[in-house]
Image (cartoon, rainbow, N blue to C red; front, side):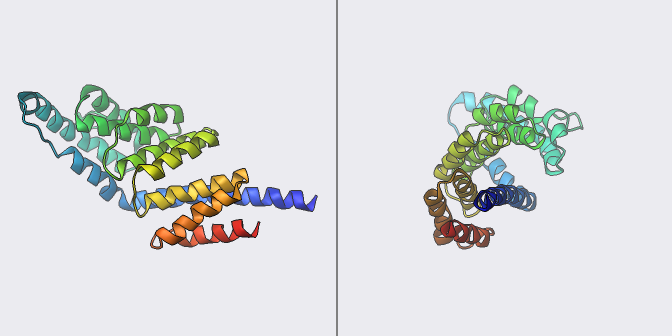
Amino acid sequence: MARRRNKKQKADETLVDLIEVKDQAQSFIERNQNIVFGALVGVVLIIGGLFAYNNFYLTPKQLEAVDQMSQAQIQFERDSFAMALTNPGGGYQGFLDIAENFKGTKAGNLALYYSGICYLQIGEYAAALDYLNEFKPGGEIAPIMKYGAMGDAFAELGDLEKAMKYYKLGVKGGNNQFLTPYYLTKIGLLHEKNGDLAAAQTAFEEIKNNYPNYPGAQDAEKYLTRVMKK
């Protein structure tokens, strides 16, 4: 009976740790969202092309989309996610309309990601998955953000198997000194919850060895010690 209580207590601790990791990520994004999302918007502003279609149609549409997105981004940064989606004010379009009306532009693609994150924040996880799935990421950071967010949506829906799948896709999709170890932590905690202690240990050791400057590195080391004692 005591052993059963200990197992339940450790499982509860793991769930608490998952919540703590989620809170750490939200805090990080709140502090650094201008940098993270500004980098993505910077990518949006890089417009190339030699063809007349790009110069006379797509480029003006892109610039218009970026202008339209500005107010929705302001609402997003204020955590006014519902307004950012549909009615950011000032006569500007929300992310949903931008994604629909500016298809084929980089800004329209980015609006899909923003829409997914907004839905994730307001608890509409199935809608979040729909928009995140449509988003086409590029570079080193965007794939991690897409797949990691999809993992969070599946976790909120209680589908931890798919959550694990997408966290792993996020880790494989690119390398970032914060985001990669953040999702490795979630992978390790899910493995621990599932009883796969060897896989959990591998994830936590990767954080310890490869991401010593990650703000959650001390927590990862704590989880590693816990797993090794089981």
